[in-house]
Image (tube, rainbow, N blue to C red; front, side, top):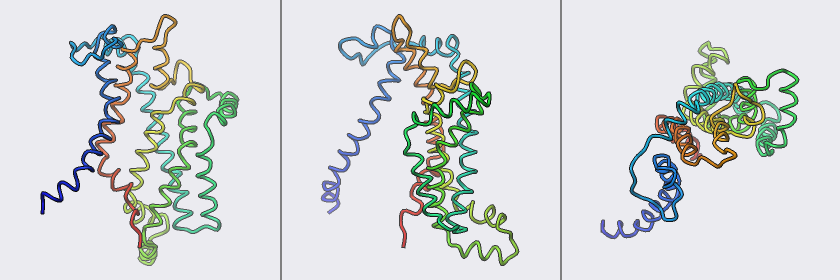
Length: 275
């Protein structure tokens, strides 16, 4: 009987393995190429066995000053994510818990803002930032990324708050809590997995963003994705260094994702089943 069950599940395992290889292989190839000599990176036949070299990493770290760009990305990503979550909690609380009039319509309108192509708002944002002397600063990217991620964060946090029984807040009010105390002591802890998952998603969006960072920053506040453009020189594209820099840029996101995996899974599945 058990053997029959294994045979039934076999196609699922095959599909799962193929899907994993499909998504993992480009990352493996990028990382492997970063350790190769330049002439092996694009040889006519793929080179699977090679002598590991760290020259590309030495160049991007010590000569290209990649750590400075990574620090800029960390600052912008962390602060914009915190700002997005703070605003998202306020919006989600107002719509889901306080039941403001027209809340669902407002939520739909907010989410529709995320569907606007970024290039449409790039020029107006550039002109506003120039007028306010915010170009090439961390602040302008923090504000823009918060604006960019707020629709998704508001919608997700709203859905997490809707799964929390209102009776819990009412019981806290009866026990003497104010609404703000009930939010901090009761609602936020219950929704913390969902808020953490939302934070991870917003952080990934901010970390990978290129268009606004390329338009709004110069030599001071450049982020890591923008720094990759420096490897396309008039002489040629430095693929080995690009892959080395790209591998280092991917690393913080992968580490954060693994560290917060438990909250991410709980948060994304929170509210998946409803009565």
